[in-house]
Image (tube, rainbow, N blue to C red; front, side, top):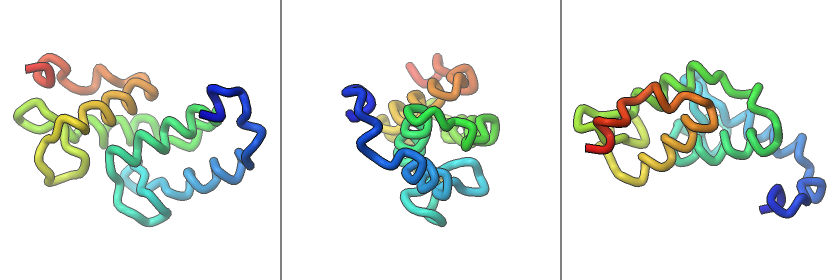
Length: 114
């Protein structure tokens, strides 16, 4: 909201970016706090925040793109974490994250639509 209002100067943006960057995991994803499990919903929040803060250089786009595309299940749906069932809400989180990263082609969108 602050970005939309042109008021990002109201927060300590470098400190916020540093926190988000520390939430990055070995698998390329992001958890809610440093050391927390990567989760598709949280990944979107972190990637979007880094994008708004012009700090996507903190993202390993290929590794994260791989992690996100691996969320596609045999059914075509997407899950939020490994070994979980597909859930329609994750389609939004994952597609939005892949869109920010420029990697929507890394999943089978036709299979997702079916």
